Length: 512
Image 1 (tube, rainbow, N blue to C red):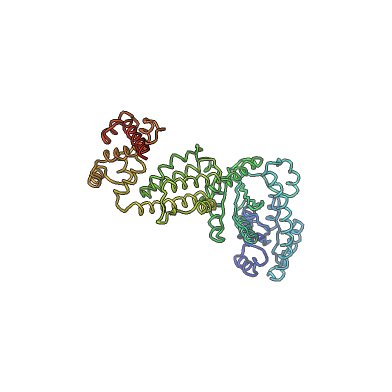
Image 2: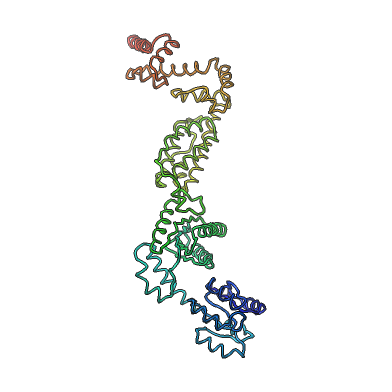
């Protein structure tokens, strides 16, 4: 749309000009009004309209004076002068100053439309030429291939302005396969920035590159982009991502801001839930070594005991850890698949027909690799873990004690304490101790020792395993303590028990 400004000291004339014709149908958009010559000067220099519809006789500053002033200050737009018969000589003088046309009052609607149609094509052609030249210069500078000094002559010839305090580059990436839908989004972005002042819009390949120019653009640019994100997602239901590089003080450094914005696009998978990702925000995340294995056992424990709050906390920590890493999205998906597969393998629950209860690897792989953002991937993992947890609880029993015994059966080799179980299952340790004694007829430590000794008896059947190794495998770090407990519950030492087993086997062989 071509921007037009109306400058006239008579309110009734200004209002009539706004309503006399359908401006939008002709490709024009009224961006403001000047109430006299002085106000008109300020509006022209601030709003930079493509066309000014101006009265010749106004208080404060005469139309001819206003034209001279804006020309001296670099205004290159078109002017249509409104004049009475008595001002005809003034109008002729204005033509010499570069006025495109003049219309006699009262304004004839058809004559005005005719002039607007003629100027529309002229302005469009000039605008397209300037934009083509400007875009070519900007693209070359953005890539860092050329210095701005190499274009000084072209800049001067086309009356382009590259003299600003700061520059900042943003990239808007959309997810549209349909060309027509993409075109509509591009047009909307162009119109959105049309009245935003010093902003250039380039469409490079499938993305839109935005260049902010002026002072304090860092805060202004972010706010404008945030508003645009909300408008685009509401109007087009489009999946977009915006990256904003840092502000630079020299146009020669604009390629730095552009490269930063490009680097943000590569992290879209990790930050897609954010409206606008700034380079400062990305840098604020402390880079760390990826050690996801430390959460694996904690996650399984939370799944096993049905602690959904802890499960959510652990996965949230994993999400933060992955954001801080420099992994690719493919590696993250691979790690997620490995994490979930290990949990399913440990659970190993089967139905009455002996088939595994959980989804096949093919289904899990498909679900994981189709995720377009880390946040959605984490939500999927949480959903799967909750489902596994519910199945575990339903399979073991609704009785809390059976769930605890099941947990001990799987984790007997760890440094288990009653206080640990109380914390995991959200019980008071003293109360849990009484429940345990009532349900098993054993104190917790006695029950744990019985489980460990029974496991060690199974392991002693393997002559290749050393006794000290078996001691560690069942949870006894001190081999002397293992010997004491084994003899207490079995009546003989581990070595004696092994000898007895071997003799029994020899007898069985002889009898056989």
